[in-house]
Image (cartoon, rainbow, N blue to C red; front, side, top):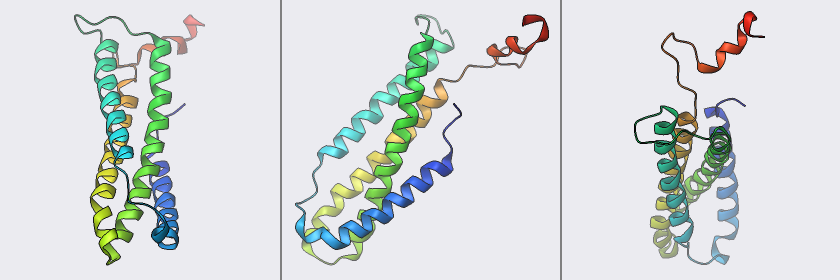
Length: 159
């Protein structure tokens, strides 16, 4: 499993933005005002993943006062981070398409939905940032000689 590619996130976001624009332009008059709960949820996930990133990095680096890290937990955090980054990109794209459409639309209902949609976009971007930070925090640090810790297995005398 490799690191999350920015191109994957951009493509998911653009596809989601296009879909949002299409759906909102067709069905906006039939939907209720935008709720704030998704924004709060995305912000909560971003905060939890940010905390997990800081804690995991400290445990991997074996900082004083920190328990050793469980390798299986780190693997789970990587999976969570990759999934969250993609979900954040999809939400960010959807909210970006929604905000763009709302800014063009000149109705009172659209103007009232701009704050919730803008906050949703910001929360989605925060989730992407926290997820990428968590993914990066789960990497094995380089040793003093410049090789990652797992490279000992690549030496012929260790096989």
